[in-house]
Length: 188
Image: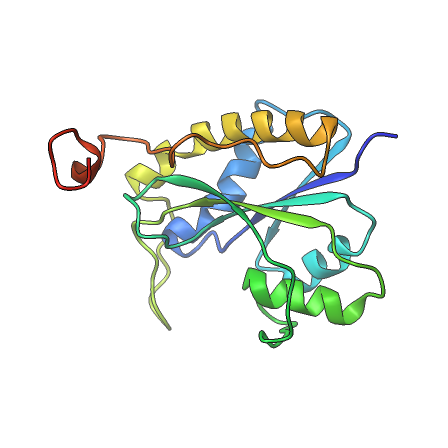
C-alpha cells in the first residue's frame, strides 16, 4: 500500500518571508510531486491543517519559515516532536506547535509523523506591523532548492515513511555563504 503523504505550505502571504510555504507550494505547480502526494497551501488556516492531520496520513511535511540562527535563506529539515501537553492548542492561528496540539486534542488516533522543511527568514514583521507582501531576496532564492529538497524527501518517504529523513547535508543556503561557513574563519 502506498503511504499517504501531505505537503503543507503554511504562512501569511502578506507578511514578507512568512509567505515562504505558500510560495513553495505555488512553485510545485511547475514541478509537481507524484500524484499520490497531497500538496496544499494552508496559508494561515490552522484549523484546516489540524483536521487534515487527522485524515490518516503517514507523514506530513510542513513548509514554513523558522528562526534557527542561520543565514537567511538556509533550509533545515526538522523532525517535529509529538505534542506533550505543554503547548496550549489554538484554533485561530497557524503556529505549528499549537496546530499539532489542537489536532491531538481533536483526534483519537496518533498524529502522523511531522517533518518541517524550514527556511531561515530575513524579514518577518513583528506584532501589528504593516503588511509587507513579497519575499526577501535570500528567501525567494531558497524556493527552488526547497522544491528540489521536497522531491528528494518525498521519494524517500514514499519508499518508507518511517525511515530517517534523508539529510539535507549541512543546512542548505542560497546566495553567498555565511562568513562563518568560510574556511579559515571562526565558524569554518
